[in-house]
Length: 263
Image (cartoon, rainbow, N blue to C red; front, side, top):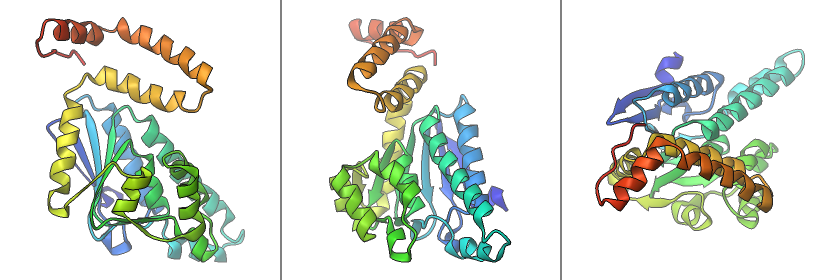
């Protein structure tokens, strides 16, 4: 079952992962989390993969956790506590692993993304949507504040915008999402994947070693103080300069030719 929940294909060094459970609004069930996490890890380890694109099938990109599933666990002897602890930790590790994935991950959203589905988008490195996309963290409406989605959301957009989404639970459209920095750009639904693939191909043309260094450094330094961030990135820049791809890239630039990356 889990192997069908996330479709997977590689084309031109791009790994396309597609959430494939539209009947249940692509919710992050335990099986969906496991399947997506596994395929993201395989993509991270695959030398043929340079960029990962995450999309979905259906009018809902991802509706977060399956509320019927969560509610059904209340009948257990501990009122569902052990299950809730497990599923929220699993979901949180998925989001952490997206950040720590060696490959750039791009979300392509052509539908509604709510709660942990919105968190999934905020966790990706880049995000592009169609004009049909809608976003929300609506947990407050059902008495379950979107605390874990808040982690990724608050690290992507400004405090006032994040709190507005979290406190009201209202859906925002793609224009508002772009305005507050939740997504990068909006495309017509018919050409969304074409344009996202174009971005992915551009990134795939870079040195993979350099991209890996850059992504890891970006997320580490942003949690540091200003002084610590500069100290850390100076060390990274020095190591990067000693890398073969840096030598090749600078030489190619100075000699006005296209670089030939080893990684």
